[in-house]
Length: 126
Image (tube, rainbow, N blue to C red; front, side):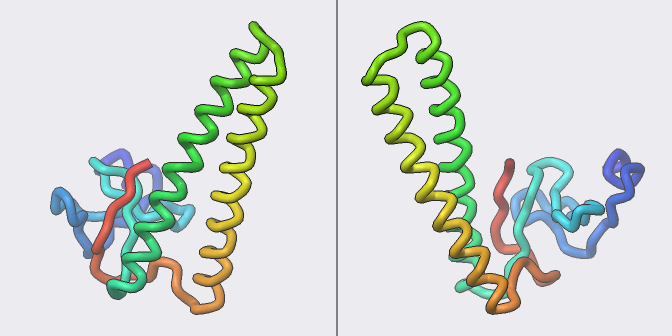
């Protein structure tokens, strides 16, 4: 917690839903728990659902990026059409995930939501 304060983070009155420690707002606006990392603060169950979906999609995006990295490494050792097909498949998944994330972001922007300072309901580390 001291490191967060030294880095210019502001301690909030809300607490982490998992461990009860105070949450901090970084200069970037991101809200974090000193133990669990990023948390999302939501107003209602509808917003909690959107945050959960966003978290799952962001996790899927990281997974796909990792798989793409593995395929690219293997491609150097054994180039071929099967590697190209696998790359194409993972890139298709990544494109779809990013498109859905973009639609969610656009929808949240239209509704004026996006994590206001209300009681925390869900956390997403990462």
